[in-house]
Length: 139
Image 1: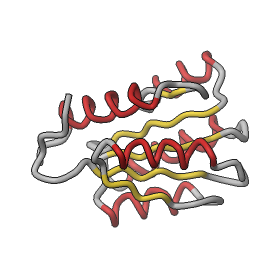
Image 2: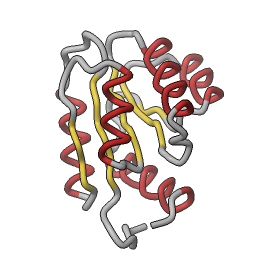
Image 3: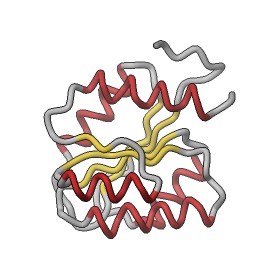
Image 4: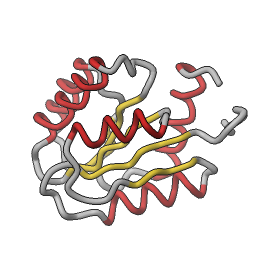
């Protein structure tokens, strides 16, 4: 599925908390950019508030959180809460990293989109974001 919108899909890629490993986030950001998406990479040590505020300012279609620190059950619920408070219900929250399957299921029940473990084919991530945006966004 190609991006047939009037503008590129806009994705914010972020690292939240003290997690200093950003190789995966950079690979994803590059893959999304190479697929024609506009990518905003926030860098390391962001707070959930910083991520959501940047997403709002940049008018993104999706937020991708890369997390390897084990704080996923704190970070994702906080971001979902902030997204709802700011009425950004049409923005996808997705991500990846080291997240146990049971936690992935719990996060999805809270409203988080697909979560991708290390080693996921980047084309699968591109296809997921593109498909979600085609279904949920109108521009």
